[in-house]
Image (cartoon, rainbow, N blue to C red; front, top):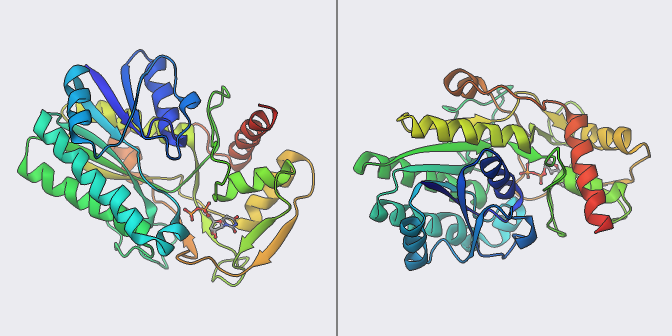
Length: 326
Ligand code: UDP
């Protein structure tokens, strides 16, 4: 019995693979290495370079390795890019997920965990969003993921197949043991960018929008440490393997930080001022997205261990330094 991790050479998938191999699970990683980094895959996992839409390859992996559960991270994740190139997102996140789900059904793999996103929700005045909040994605990225949630729901109705979709809020930070982190050099995410600036790899941090209806005018997000996110996946896997029903969960802490607050945290942790530059809003960016994590805590017993912006930033900075010195 083993777990297939798609996108296991990527930022979050590589952390999932570490968690699984650490506890002795057999893991196969499938990654096309378009954005993934081969060296980031644990040597204890079997690595296969390829695409989730390659049905022959996927079915061969599922059979050969006796896969009983798929954890599906592979996809494209940059909101503004999805606005500029929506069809890339409908291909990588929607159409290819369809192919993967079909391969699972055809091969009798009945358990599936999906990386979804808080971007499936619409703009809201609520302080935080629960799973039943209105779905009205502001970007093709959010739509591409919401469509995959729908495919999973319909597949679970029609077949002997159960899934957990985890809606990630803003994932950041790195493995506390320093074995993995965000490696993409052209990463666009805030904490990664801020760490690059702190280490002199970029001249300044752009603050995208200072006129949002938020306390300091900059965008507010619920940043979750990647290790706590992986903890949620481990609980979801145990839930499915224990016969648990299909479900959806938010993954965030339930409180948000503005772009300026993140910049201050990076200054605090790095111990030096951070150059920032106010810029116009970025396409597709909602003002604030904060999770209501009550369901994940109640249903799966999730207990965050790293709910601290400074800890998130410190681990991200430590990883960035490691990349610098590599
Ligand atoms: N952001 C920013 N400068 C950057 C990157 C991001 O001001 O260089 C802002 C962005 O507008 C949003 C927040 O930081 O309000 C988080 O953006 P990120 O790209 O990290 O994640 P997203 O919420 O878009 O998935």
